[in-house]
Amino acid sequence: MLSRYEHSVMGAVYALCDGKDGCMVSLLDIMSILPTGGKYSAERIDRALRSLQADGYVDILSSERRGEKMYVISLKGDGRDFADLGARRRRDFMYKIFLAFIGALATFVFTLIIKAIFKN
Image (cartoon, rainbow, N blue to C red; front, side):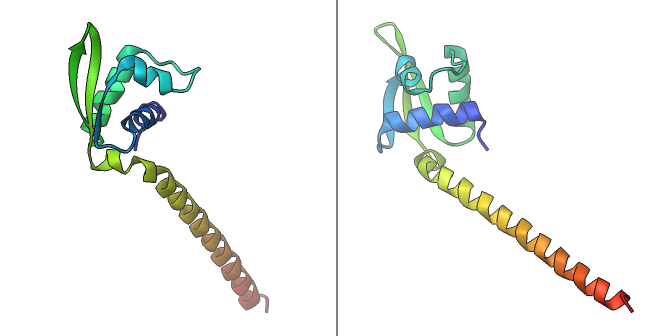
């Protein structure tokens, strides 16, 4: 499960790759897509990218171009499926709500049956 920070960085990387399997981006490109107001720094973004690499979302190669640090990013299996992650989370959340509702209903019915048995 990705942290909120990693999720934001992965969303920016996914948007920059624009449906391709890989892309070459700079730190400024990533920061321009990230939402404002967050505590985004070069070190934290680099740590988040390394964490995404360790989790199997991307493969990263760092390079320099005209004195600017560039990332060559290749999306791996989970990275390519990142757009489906939100839908999967919502579906899992609704499933948990449904199970909680079924459990509450079963408890209510069980209580009514027990009360009817021990009423006499």
